Length: 165
Length: 249
Image (cartoon, rainbow over all chains, first blue to last red; front, top):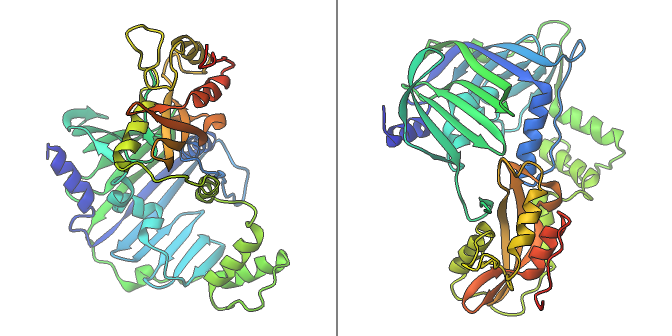
């Protein structure tokens, strides 16, 4: 690892060689800042999107912590469960909702990419096409040695970012 | 492997697993403060998993509803007639609801298509359309490019004397002192070989200005160069309360 080509190949090929996975995910959200982030991005793409937070069983605090147990068997079976969420797909039917109230989806459109887990497992689908990467360099983050690389929005024929002096 | 990026005013940092490429941790920041963090606190790659791991077995007391039943209930609540709609098809019911509830709220794409449809070409597009489009983007990209006289904006039609008004306007843009304003070309439609409608936006530090977001303007070809229309600059600087001298002055 060390060249831009290696990085692109790594992300594009993700999940390289992986067939199944189990583990735990921690998801932390600051609601007011997330609302501002959503607004910033949607303004940029000239869209009209609202930020909504679902709430079960109590007042919404400033932040939310969610601890998920996850299991995955590629390409289309997954399980994600926490005290506030159930998201299970057996390959043809998906069950999604709060542990006390579940919706059963039989449409074929549900894909792993639509889930929080999918974004982590298949980052290339979300990042490529939108980004240009700089050259990787050695660095240290949180006390661990790693390679770091800057990325920026890819210039395209529509939505090109220009700088006025 | 860590990667950092900034999209639409939001900074993202990803930690990728060097073997599989999956994201082990993602942090989103806005204004330098974290807005969301997602990370694997524990992960096992390629363990044995069973079919039962992906089965849903509801415990007593849990309500499980089919999506199609929820959609039919929603349609009923809004008084939407589903006669002729395939009630076994969630997509068909969903479409019937959307058609009824959202028909007066065009999507951004539909809005842009409608705006473009208003302009009827009166001639052919330029022979080298892609090059012309790039030249228009260059003009907007380099709005502030000045002639050696330091009074003329070279990428603006009748740009003489417009340096001062542009600088005045830039001083009045909130946040532009730290992060210069940018012009984004959203779309171009050629009306004839030497004139085009341009939809553009102003962005400062990744944030679009609501008032100048998809704003309509013009570009014209003068002596072989594509320039921003004078009226477009007058319109743009007018948002900052700056008057632009007439091209005849």
